[in-house]
Image (cartoon, rainbow, N blue to C red):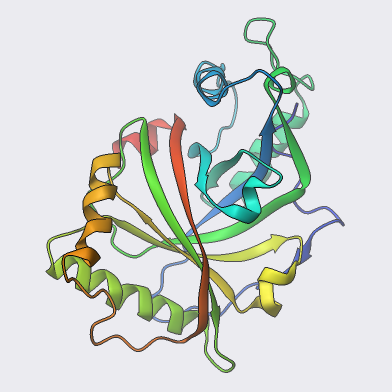
Length: 259
């Protein structure tokens, strides 16, 4: 099964498009995702091991993660995990897609195909821009960690730059309190337009501590009196759909490992 298809298909619609960037907001990288369900009798460790052992010939994404949903009610009704692949830009994505399209429909390793392990839903494919707020973060360089995400909807009149400034301010509060976990802001570029997209006003805020243990310590900060929103003005009408993902690193390019 091809894990990455041509993303600029007619079945996709632009949600945010080419947003004018704030002066201090980086261009970011692109993240292509698709949602998948494990086949009967298959476990997540089996799927992860298969992905890590795949031959990586030709152009490859910079990073690839298999994210197993732990807490995400709507997602878990239909899927088990999400495949996320990272690209420097659309040209890089096209190179990888073109290379994959020239390969057999299923890569063999050995005699085991992706479709023997899981089934992905092409209707869920999307591309988002991912911007890292704190590039000098503690870093997730291991094999597995926990990732916390929250979907937020901007107030009318607020912009992506306002969301960026909000996440920067929240991250500054965490850093001052001694926690420097990776924080990111996602906005949809291409993908199916659903109720959660709210005409381009939806963004996702993610926190990715370096380890599972670090995630637990970060979550306990609020229980111990830390207030992440202290002195921060929110541009959002609502922040809902909190989710937790057990994130497995299945591939890192040499360039990504060096960063």
